[in-house]
Image (tube, rainbow, N blue to C red):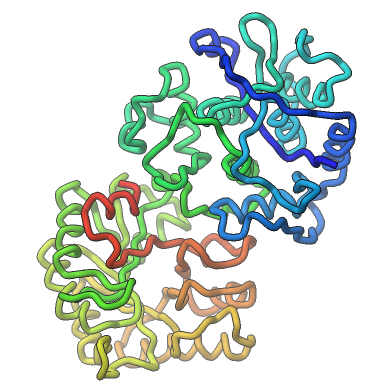
Length: 469
């Protein structure tokens, strides 16, 4: 039995006139059994009760795993009979209509029309009608729907953007988002700009390549529709690492140690660090303090579009000797997260700053020292008592040693759990993670993602690709 979780999109009737109809459409072998499977999936979902997490065998390590599992666990989607999901398979327009109908349940805004190539016996007839009446999908100029045609990435995003009536995009800035923005058709640009500003676009593997004319995949549309649920306040605001998000949140980058000769993957060479800071300076970026960043995420304070929060984890002495002079030269603000149990440790390749050095950092109005726990352990594996000890004691030690109020936390390894985010607000205003860790219902202010910078970014081009700038 084939369970429907496939998608496909169409563009607005007026826009499709300016687009070439696909000549080499692929066709999906849809059956009555498929229709029944779709109807079962559509009717059984319940977002108001906890869902059992079902898994499929071929999404481990896939960039869209989180969104796919969410949709499966909420009965929006199912895998194939062989236990796979086939996230890289292309989608048809009929499949997309079925998924729009199931996931977004669109409210009718126009009367139904009959498509000659979608008889009432077609497995997706009801779904196509619902998606059409809801304003998500339309037919072609000749009156057909072409239910078995694949769709492009442009078409899928235009459909969702228009169906959700998204606004706020700036067509003139598309080239600053995507290196291949010139491939976007003129009729599609307003909708793609709206989708971008509303955080619906995810580009894998290169965030700066939109790939407008490529067929969209099941994994890609899983992410798009998950983001549509977020837009409707029906899902938590999980930020996929490949999501275009910087128009809604200042850039947050995470460094570890700046060294002349990097050793570990998280190290950055001094020349590369200089080049990266020069980039921010030359491009007119404003660096933020933690308090300024807090006002953005909690009170929607307005900051320049080109804003960045620079963070440094672990209290390495290389940052004191190599990073600080460069930051001071540019008058850049930065936050240093230290694990208090290791302050002042020496020996080996990665010695830590002393309390006296941290005091000199804290005395500089550009810089601030905050908590990275006591022992730098995996918080998600700790008991509630251990979590409390790590959070409370690190805060108390920093406050005592530096004569300041410690209000911000960075999770070691980006590791946290529901218990951690339950306790963290007792001690800290917000908490920082990294993109690839956490659990899906984490409070947004206690799971703030950061972009890790390491020694693999040996050129400015690679750095810009990582930060999507």
